[in-house]
Length: 384
Image (cartoon, rainbow, N blue to C red; front, side, top):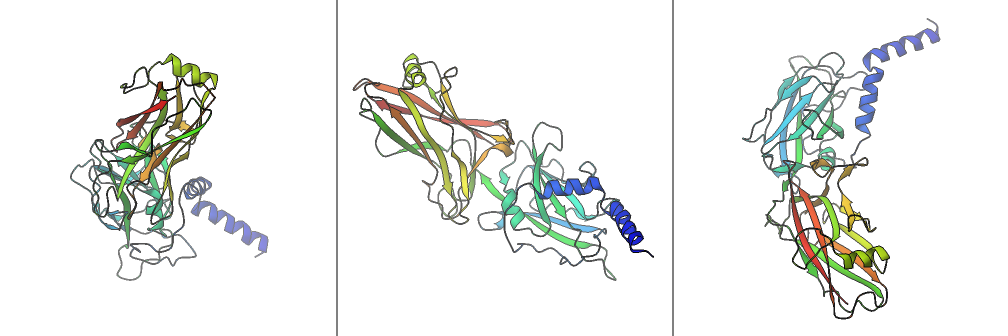
């Protein structure tokens, strides 16, 4: 047969094995998120050994949860796992809306349908009583080669963007005599949820004084009050920051943003400016950067505030989307003073009256797994 005819045959077969639509979805998922890593925690039941064609047989899928701090067993209570076929619509398995815990969802043998070619999608849906957060990048790293990507997508049409993993079993070896399915074990990595009652801001160093003199003045706080962890305070917990603002307040004891004509005049006129705002920490074990990092410093005169940070995904902002928020994670051996909020002010000479007091408010909004929010605040006191 002519070589051109052989090429045509190969292309036609390839079209039906991996349709353009499936290739598009696979490429999209493989390109979203992820980081390096080498060894799976749970290697699965069959080594990838199928270079010629995708595995299309049944897969016995066993999903467990592990605490990302040390890979110990930890129940992710009150969440729903849903396994979808390649079309991201047909459900292959659902753990159900249970609140009793899904430490071992144990989906059992999942049969592939036409077009799966070894590719499934696992959605993690947080519910009203969910107790922890999945860490997508750590989960990917420790479940190679079977978890190959992740994205955010509202799978149950409830308004929340769910975390969805790509599961690729295409490289599994074909079934041998006596086998009914291949076994794949997945261990989702989770962080405990930092509760609403504990976080606070604690000042580092002295208060801002003598600001009638021109110069730059820096005030720092660290996030304190973490839950007592197994290893060190807050270790193994995740606090999700949804919004952080610096705003004017009418009186020293105010607990929310309000009108202050004096501060409005100083900030709008530029005689008092925010020159730096940052919040971050480096993981003691991973070396990974957490928090929003360098934030915005521009004064919004209309709203009398600096919107330093707001949760977003691809430019879309929404403080109620849990998976948009910035993770403040306390890794193992993480110092409890790790997360430092730094704000620097620049003032012109005489802009602040000597010995007079001026007040601004730091107002932080945090998310919970149930998509509700809670707030913490602290007053910045400046003396002229």
